[in-house]
Length: 634
Image (cartoon, rainbow, N blue to C red):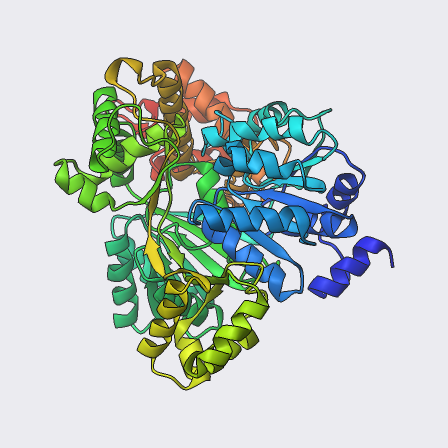
């Protein structure tokens, strides 16, 4: 058993790597820059965790998702691997302590958001670290051609100047060939080095259902496809409405969205993962880091904004390689809905400038002030004060974030954190002279090791239960210790944050690139068009459509999607069907022909051509006008 397999077995209990994982591990260990393209559920984390554990030093993991960052750190700790994180939800002192530990402790992983890379504090400390690998998760965020471009990712390449010997492993689940090339260039790879697992999911059956009654269709699908399911919708209110509909019709369900408390989200997620709830109805807040293997069904009631987003979310089905279904429900209203979302996502330039000035005024910052400051942020309070629609304000802030002026986090759930700030000898003296605190301090030290070296998240309710004390007494003791400067104490808080990356600028100095803004609009429009094309097409295998989008142009029809199934019913192969369709489209677009003339013009079996043509007319891909002539489309 080689070193990589030993690590895999010791920490994860696996005896073998998944396809492509070991090749990525070997190249990263050998010091090569690598871009790894692996679909959702392909096991990306192991590809950087194994080589990092095999070498001395620490691995930097750059990711924009704070919630996922926290989950991965906790999962590594549970496996006995020392890991920590630095992100926007932490105080300056917490970051200082964490970076000290990364530099001088024996930690193996430091997770951090890309915004932290440019800070003077990080740049000074990172040069004292023995960095063995730089892992860049969600690497598509560095490309303006990608679907989730973030300017903060452009700072990653600058770290290479400080760490010239450290190899880089970039990871993403979704990237077109254009985006993949751009990632390697932006991250300054020493040489192009792309390892790609096919995006094909042979066990996942893609289905599009056109229906004017999506709720009725959903009930029918949930009754016909048994097993665990995820139902994606656009907004929080709809999650509750659809879950209630399912429950009313005897289907075990619950709802999930980012507006729920951390405790509620955790409980609902656990109920679903343990099989106590069959269907979770959710927004796209659900799914990141969820690795439940036996999801048999993923339904999208609303059209996602891009193929990339759809592919990631649909890909949460069937990770155990058993047959699962990804069903997209659509109708004529979806196109209008996408167009409305486009308008909201790109407010006028004057609106963005106004929101910029208002958000600094919200915290009373004059021109030239505010740089590097973090505040709790309520979008609803901000929108209400300045009489702005919340969605408009949110979109404007997203635009300002893309241009690097500020950062708005998702709602963070930060538990109470404490750390002892005095030496053990001094603490002993306090324990001797304060018998009521003595037992409490001993219990804290017993439950939470490392309180002298790290800020540690604690659960006051759990402490109260172990100490057999009322909860308010526990909180009182923590306050007393903090006032006496025995501990640094950061109470529990649950809120989004806003971070100002630059000082407030006046109107004439605020630079928002019209060219960049226009490019983002065009790219967004192209991705929406691709999503609509996928939903509306009924002549090409669904799997092939998705694979073509990601550059795999030589794939074969899956034989199982709704399009392939329809072709099978016509008693012809997918190849025959697509060949006939291509010929029909060419003839109809070039000539005014009737059904009979079209059939006669195509070589082959007339009966098969006629079947295919009738199918096109029934599915509204071809229209027969009053004069008997055929038109492509409605």
